[in-house]
Length: 449
Image 1 (tube, helix red, strand yellow):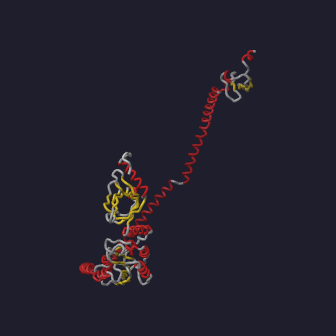
Image 2 (cartoon, rainbow, N blue to C red):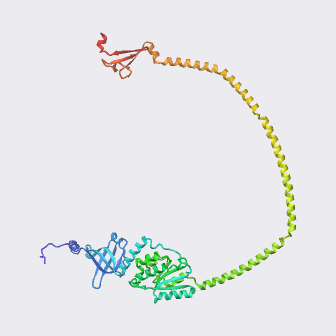
Image 3 (cartoon, rainbow, N blue to C red):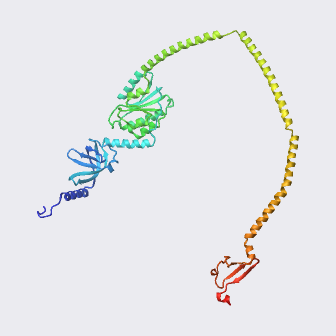
C-alpha cells in the first residue's frame, strides 16, 4: 500500500495507465461470443456487446475497419472477433477495439457459401439460361425416392399433365454421399444418346431443411456438373427462401418442388378450356368463311360468260388495236420525214466550205491589222525606253563621279563619310568616275607638309 503522503493520481492519469497496461499485457486476441446490442450510428462505427453465459464485453468496430467485415452482425449471431483490449479513458469503460469479425457455425457456412458463389460467378458457372422444353417429352427427376419432394412433383404432374413421362433417378439428397451421387447421375444421363436436349429435361429437387441439410447442393463440383450438363436443368431445392449454388448454376430455378412441376408442364384444365374456346372460334370462322365463299361463288357465276362471246370481244379489241397501230406508224413516219428535211436545211446552211472561207477572210483582216500595228508599237516602246534611260542616268552615282567626285571605301568595303571614321596609316580605296585609286591616311601634320 502506498504511503498517505505519496502524490495522488488524477483520474485521467489512472485511466491512461490502465489503458497502457491492458494494451501491453493483453495485446491482439480472438474472442468468441454472442452479439448483443448491435448499434450503427451515423458516424459509420459499429458498437456492440460480446457475451457468453457468465460475462459480457463492450466492443467498438470503427468505420475504417467495419467496411471490410462481410458478416451481417445481427443480435444473437455467434461470432469470433479479433481486436486489442483497451480502455475508453473519458468514461473508464473497459472495451475491445475490434479489427475483424467472423461468423461461427452457420455464419461460417454462409461465409464459405458467399466465397464459393463469388468464385463460380466470376468463372461464368452461373451463365446458363437455356429454355426448357414445354412440356418436356421425358422428365428425369433427381431426388430421394422417399422424400416429400418426389410426391409433390408427381402429384402436380398427375393433376396438370398426366401425359408426362417421368423417370425417377434415386439419389441421396443429404450428407457427404449426396453431392457425388448427384454428379454421377448427371454424368450418366448426359451420356444417354436416346435423350434429346430439345425435348428432355432434368429436375434436381428436394424438400426444405436447415443450411446444413441443404449443404450438398452447395458443392462446387455439383455446380460445375450442372453448368456443363448437355440436357437443360431446373433446380428446386428447399423452400422459397432457400438458395443454393445448384439454383444459380441451373438453367432455371423454382422456389419449391411443386412450383417446379407447375413451371415444367401446362395445366390440362386451362388447356381444355382454351381448346374449347378455340374450337368454338374455329367453328364460327368456318361458318363465316363458307358464307363468304358462297357469296363469292355467286358473284363469279354471275360474271361467267360463254367462251364464244369472250373470243368475239377479244377479236374486236384486236382489230381496234391493229387500226391504232397502223395510224400511229403512219404518223410517226410523217414526223420523221419532216424532221429529216429540217436537218438537211440546217446542214446546208452550215457547210464546211463556207465556214472555211469565212475563217480565211477573218484571218486576212487580222494579219493586215497586225502589220499596221507593229511599227507603231515598236516606235512607242523605243521612245519610252529612251526616256527611262535618261532618268536612270540622271540619278546614277556614276554620273556624279563623272563630275569629279570620288567615293572612299576602307578595306572592309564600308563607305567613308567623315574624316573621323579613319585612322592614320589606314589604307583606303577611292572610286572615281573612271577607275580606282589606292590611298593611305596620313597624320594631320604630315599632310600639311
